Image (cartoon, rainbow, N blue to C red; front, side):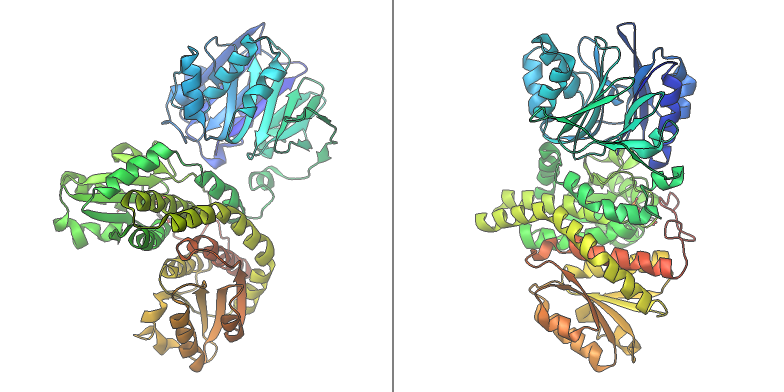
Length: 607
Ligand code: G6P
């Protein structure tokens, strides 16, 4: 997601410091950059689309005057990567500038209210409402601090912000709700950032800002208050001993592990999708005669799960197709009545783009789900939606899978509503249950990670694994298999469990490990039959299993429990988590670097 960095120095120019701080965030990926400083009662601002070095070569980011300023790396969520959408965003008067990391869910309502009060908007960002709200509050006579406080109480969603105001030359105000924010205190000045790497050159004395708190930074101190009660909080700085590399990984040994742990918050973002985009995609899907879900790798595995969601909730047939096979397999059948829903984290995978190009030529409708606003996919798609998982650096996709499923689940719910195929009670139940998924994922990581590590140690010498599941768990199984072979280089096989007797079972001998994905769902009885078949031939059973399923727990040699009462169609999100961790720890046990699997690339831009 976006990186924010604000700094008030006691003396000296702040712009070069912010510039070099932002460079330390480059590893996360971004599409635009911007800095604003305050000097002699005026805001000076430079921002543009592109890499920091390019923007610096174009505009010289270092010559902004003043000892106080804010800087931002943007990773587009609302609005394409354009200069106008880059941060800082300003109010009508150009006196208030804001940088933001997060998503303002109610920005459309707030913007309408502000437009009615004659505010002019220039960007497509959700962020732009914030400076205008502050401007409105300043007009009513509130001081800077109170104006920011009043503004943030109106915001729904997630945010970490830094605000500067030309009328307050020595203050940056920061606030936080569900997006990271730390304060750094040094004898040269005080800074606030979303990321520790930016703070490290200045200081290793850090104060955490909690949700619902505001921090007022001045050159020598920071004042922290609860936004709601306005109570002042006294919090001592702690010293961190991280190197730059450790800080970039937020203390995790690998990006992959960091990204696995990030899933609860990314899934929460995935519940903040914009209604109008969901509605638009749903409308296109509803009127399509033939729908192909086209993707590669992990994104394809998410499409397999999605096909179960659409058929079960919406009575809609969708065909998941590997992009590299699409033209040969279905090319001649594609026409004006076909819809392609292309799913690609990067939005740049050559096989996906090639399939889209072919389908476009045959007049099909192109839709997209992607993590990269501004990518080729978003430019060629008639409509698209962001999966909201934030930059993913580990080559093996983890949060991509769960975030894409979060989008698919909401699309299927929207479509089910239009089509009236599901009772109101069932809709309410599914809607309530999808909201619980981020917390469940957190619980699974917290409770099961140690056990999974032990299981990996126990099975590290095994030469091959089976991954089996029935129904929608087939998708979970194929994704678990993909992770293990990608990063631990263990040849593995995934099948729908029912099909395992038609071939794969011939491999089973004493001690052959089979990982079963076992939610308590409609496939349970049949799955137990498959487990028995494997056990009868000496197979060793590892089950990822509903905690209330004692029958399977008794049959398994090892098991990892998942909380009970998760609707069948939502199970791939929590059930894949132990499989991601298993693959990660298998790679560690084998002494491999999970972030850099051999021969693989994060984004494959060749056919
Ligand atoms: C490569 C990556 C995979 C990814 C696949 C599809 O193979 O190594 O992790 O799942 O591409 O990428 P996309 O960006 O299209 O989702």
